[in-house]
Length: 70
Image (cartoon, rainbow, N blue to C red; front, side):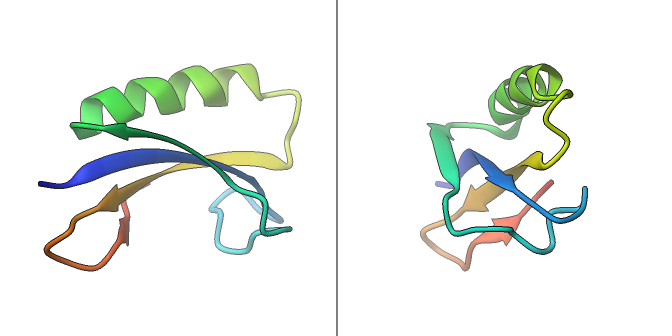
């Protein structure tokens, strides 16, 4: 069964393609995407003043490779 994680990290741009450092915080796991998205929205909404901090949702499936969902 897939699990979802909210990942916080510093990035050079909003699409989170390039991390500034290796220090990411992983929050979870969440049983479904909607629960992860609620946590993502809560964290992203409080970090507006910190423009270098970005959040994404990662889907981890033990039967397949990790995939970035958001």
